[in-house]
Each structure stands twice: as structure tokens, then as C-alpha cells.
Image 1 (cartoon, helix red, strand yellow):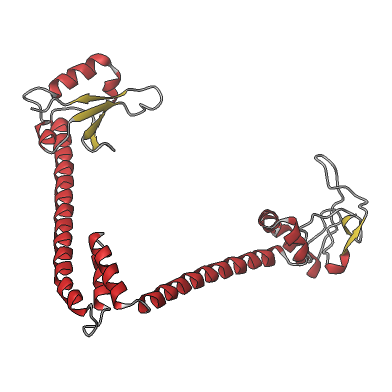
Image 2 (cartoon, rainbow, N blue to C red; image 1 turned 180 degrees about the horizontal axis):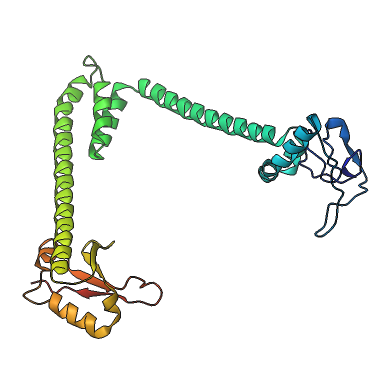
Amino acid sequence: MARVCRHCGARLSSYFGAGEACWYCHRSLDGCDIVEGREKIEPQSPGEERPQPAPATGAGRAAASRGQGSNWLDRLSSWLYPDWVDKTIGGFTPLGRLGCLGAVIALLLAVGIGLDALEEAKDAKRFREMTPATHLTQARDEFRGGIFNLALRHLQAIPSSAPEGPAARQMEPEVRAAQQSYEAARAAAQQAEAAAKLAKDTAVRDLQKSLTNLGYDLAVTRSDVDDEIVITSEDFGETDHRVRFLSFLRSERSPAFGVCLAGFRTVRLKTKWSLLTGHSEAYALDCR
């Protein structure tokens, strides 16, 4: 038994919804027109002729256009829903089925947010229920692990009237000093990294400008490898040109001294389409 059109007996797909047009007789079907029975007309095969619909007017034309316009929704909703879900909401239109999916996704997101909030509430409750001795032990562990904010939080939760209060008040300046030293060292490292990047970018631009002024038609860029530059030219497909250019780049009159000072140690000579048939190979800059 299958879902068929009550008017012509054409077999209907499992995701066919009320308000859509039958693929064979083109009638707009409501819930009563979709019945369980033995199909009289198999789904259309390639090249098979089917009857042309009579000219429709008014509500009939609107219903037929709705049926034709919802084909992409039919395909999308059939992909998103398994058969057992389709049987549950089979009377819904394709747009209604997608709306159900959106509601389910929103519900799952709300549940996930609720679970996160519940876990945070449990952590806060465990923190409040800690004894001063436990707070002091946790603070020392976090301090040794370099998690200074959490160590200070545990210390500040210890009342001064508690037996552990003096030890906590004595430990707080030590933790704050270590935190300040760590943040200062991190800031200095970030500044040094930014300065090194700026120096390398500037050296690459200067080398590009110098080679262009010498008449070379090429492009100089940075590589994914930190100490490597990439020079791209169609002339590098010829071995003799590549050898002459590399010899010039390593010579005393080379404009590559700037990239050497910036920390680059290798140069990759490549052609534009090196992935297919061109050339791409790294060479030492021989920085002095």
C-alpha cells in the first residue's frame, strides 16, 4: 500500500503535503485527497508523456503555482527528515516542516545554554561551600600553576578572622607581584614579536623595491616558513636564469642584506604556476 492521489491513483512521495498539486493530474490536493491504496499510475519515467493540465484560473492556478514553487522545499525537507519523522508530521507543508526543524534547533540551543548555566551555578556553590583551609590549599596550587587570578580569588574568600586569614593576607602581595611580572614579560614578548614582524615585512618590501628598480620583473613575498622569503618570476623556469639570479642575490652587491638582517635565511625561487609544471625550490641566502 502507498500514498496515492484519490482522483487519478498516481503514487505520491512520502513527503508530499496537503495543498500541493498532484504530479499527474495536477489537481490541488487537500488532506482528504491523499489516501492509502494501491497505485494505479507509477511515478513518471524518463520520456513518458503525461496529460497536460487544463487552464486553471483563480484558486486552482494559485494552488498549482504553490505546488510547483515548493519543489525545492520538498527536496530539502525530505533530506532533513527521516521516514519516521515524516510519518509524524506528514500533513505539514514543506515550509512548516522546516519551521519544525528550526524550533527543534532553537530548543537544543536553549537546553545547551541552560546546562552551561547550571554547571556554572554548581561551581559557584562548591566555591562558596569551601572551608578557609581548602581555599588556602587551592590558592597555593593555583599559584604554583601560574593561574594567578584564581589564586587571588581563593585568598580573598578567606575571612581575616579565620585561622588561615594571616597566611592568606601575607600571600596576596606575593601573588600580585608574580602576576605583574608575568604580565610585563608577556607584554614585552608581544612587543618584540610585533617589532620582528614589522622589520621582516619592511625588509621584504625594500627588497621588492630594489629589485624592481634594477629592472627585474618579479614579486617578493613572505613564506609560511618564518625565515624564508619567496621570489616569484616566470624567468625562473629556465635553469641558467635561476642560477645567475641566485648568484647575484648572494653577492656582496646584492640588495638582500636587509632581509638577512631581519632574520631571513632561505629564499624560494618559483614560477607562478609551480604547482603544475613550474619550478619551486628553496636555496640558502648565504647571509654573512
